[in-house]
Image 1: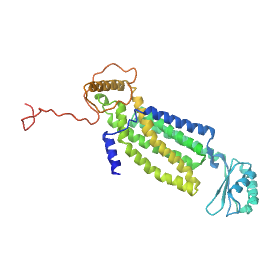
Image 2: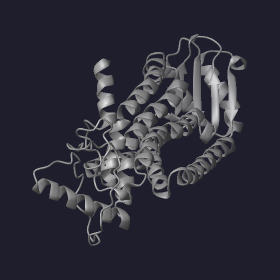
Image 3: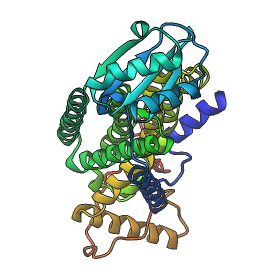
Image 4: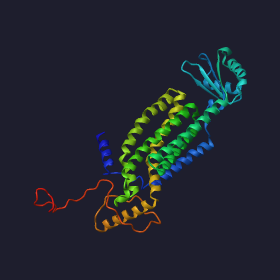
Length: 374
C-alpha cells in the first residue's frame, strides 16, 4: 500500500508517467475493434428482450413438483407454441415465462400446464404483461438517455469547453455501445433492471472523465505564455496525476458489483441481480477505460489543431531542439510528431506552466547581509 501511495505521489508530481496521449492511436484502434465486435454481436445475435418488452405471461406453480426444469420448458413450449424460460425458485416451485403470446390465450395455456405438471389449474398464478407496457418503458428509457446526453454536453461545454464536451460525449457512446454489445453476446435477458443499470453507469462513466478534465483545465491556464509544454504534454500529465485515484475508485466500485454478478447471479441464481450487475460491471470498467484512453487523448487531438496550439507546439519543439543542441534537457517528452501546416515562428513568452526549478544567481547578494543590489 505504501508503494502504491508513493507511486501515486510521484505520478502526481510528474516524476514518472506513461505516455498515454502519445500512444493514442493504439487506444483508438483497440476501442474501434472492441466497438465493432459489440456492434456485430448486437446485429447478429440481437438483444434477448424480456417479457416486459415483448408482452406475454408468467406462470408460477404453488409448490414443488416432480417435473424437472427441462421437462417444464418442453411442456410450456408445446402448450404455447413459443419459447419458454423456466426457473426453479427457492421453495421448489417453478416460474414459467412465455413471451410473445396473446394474453387471451393464457387460460388455455394455464390449463394445459396444469395437466402436464399434475397440479390444480386454480393454484397456478398467472401474471399477464401487455406489449404496450414494455414499449412504453423502452420509449421512456430512450427519452431519459437523450435528455441526459443533451444536459451533459451543455454542462461540460459551460464548465469546461465545447471540445471537452464532445470528447466526453464520444466516450459515453463508446461505453453504452460496448455494454449493450456484451449484453447481446452473453445473451442475458433485457429487463427493466437492465435499463436501470444502463442509465446508472452513465454517471459513473463521466466521473473519472470530469476529474481528468478538471486537472487539465487547471494546468492549461495561460498555456500559450510558456515554451516548455505542449497541450498534449499537459494532457498526459493530467492523466498520470489522476491515474491512481481513477484506478482506486473504479476497483472499489467494481468489487460489490462483481459480488452481485458472480455470487448473487451466478452462484445463487438470482436473475434480477444478473440483469443489473452485468450492465453495471461492464459499464464501470468501460467508463474507467474511456476516461484515460479515449476522452483525454481525443481532447488533446482536437486542441492541437487550433492555431494557437500549433504555434505553441512549434515554439516548444524549437526550444527543445535548441536545448538538445546544447546538451541540455527540458525533461518534457514530445508526445507525437509535429502537426502539418503549422504557422511560422512566433516569439516565445516567458511564463511557465508546471513546476520548474530556476537556477539561483551565484553573485546575487554576495557580501551583503540583506542580499539586495545597490
